[in-house]
Amino acid sequence: MSKNVVNPIILADIPDPSVIRVNDTYYMTSTTMYFTPGCPIMKSKDLVNWEIVNYVYDIIDDNDHMNLQNGKHDYGRGSWASSLRYHNGIFYVAFVAYCTGKTYIYQTTDIEAGPWRRYEIDGIYHDMSILFDDDGRVYMVYGGGAIKLIELTADATAIKPGGLNTTIIENADISGGNSLAEGAHIYKLNGYYYIFIIVWPRTGTRRRIEVCYRASSIDGLYEGKIMFDDDMGFNNAGVAQGGIVDTPDGKWYGFLFQDHGAVGRVPVLVPVTWEGDWPIFGDNGKMPTIMPWPADEYTADALIKPDDFTDTTLGLTWQWNHNPKNSDWSLTARPGWLRLKSNKCNSLSDAVNTLTQRTFGPKCTGSICMDISHMQDGDFAGLAALQDQYGFVGIKMANGEKHIIMAEAPDTTKEAGIEGQRIYKTGVPETEVEAVPTTANVVYLKVDFDFTDAIDEAEFYYSYDNANWVKIGRKLKMSYRLSHFTGYRFALFSYATKAAGGYVDFDWFRVSAL
Image 1 (cartoon, rainbow, N blue to C red):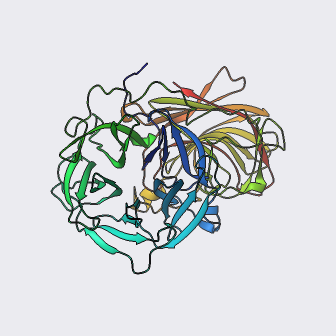
Image 2 (cartoon, helix red, strand yellow):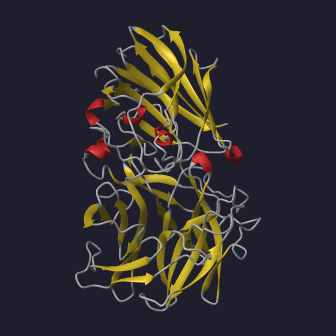
Image 3 (cartoon, rainbow, N blue to C red):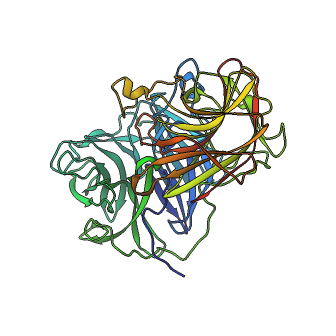
């Protein structure tokens, strides 16, 4: 039975979505940043319920930045704004990685199982979108402010020598200013080339709007209109950046995102109609009050899931913070448990093998059962609310004694006068807020998140029986910062400030709405 859609359709961090339909199935990719494996492939039958079925890559590169070593990191970078396309039986995924200075194009005939063929292009083609034209030529549209076009080889593996290479829109901001315009998604429909772009207006209060340009030839002249200017009542945070997709019965939808505070960038589904060969988003640029579900109800696996660690491989909802060190984690050393060995570092921000899942709104809770009997002096382990300004509840082992602690990250970006920017200093020890001595070998730890109306607070708890919970420390005030460029995540961690060799075992991770 059909229902009505409630936007945002997923109250979790799914930034920069790129959506296609192949027959009766929709596929979506999203920005990964520094998490691995990367570039998730999500699948849906109705544009509303999504499940992760694959990833495009295990790691982008094996270097110091992505391995969190030698003082390097990849926070706020990694893979950005992928473009997903399907043409003549082949799926294409393209994205840039700022730490390598390259653009990547992956190809496969089986998007849900792979394998993927990888091609590299030197240079950053920012927020690119690929178009397979009717005449067999292939293009990539990219850029910020000025929108540019470059031609690819027919097999979409490289820049075409001597191919078209030009600026097609000198200033893509038509909102009355000269602000950043980026996130291009290009399509060819009914003889027109359409490019959808996000604009950050300098005038007015709206922080995002969606615009569309069209032309009858690939290299212009392009004329533009504002397509969507609505924040859905959330802090003037406009809905923008994304593309359009049609259903098997001929309906059209925009699939965009909204910055939604500390939970991250959340996807929004907008009905689209056509007038005079222009797409009309919502009710003349506003979200309709009632929006019918575009298909009958379809139940898919959640994007955030509990885990009892009984499988010998990690579930697809898990991603590592940076590249994992595979020799130092295991699901088989103690069957039914996840083992994380501690590697030497100074803080959670530079700890390898930190395992993460998304949080979700409006409220959610996650808890773990952890065996701490094999920790060594200088070891820390537990459950974190991970972003730039993170906090955690965990165990500290010092001088042969264990303490349950709640700790917070130091504000290194603010101290440097660069708050909110992508310059970020790792390895600064946390601030310990509260410590409780313990002699237990098994503890239960929990973090509650409240994203309601941008409250953006997390609270931390411990227990010895998984029934009676004790609050520890203080509320963590969360904020979405560009230094990480992600929503807050649950994070299981173990690290050593003195010497590697200790470890902890996690029996399970449980997550639910509050």
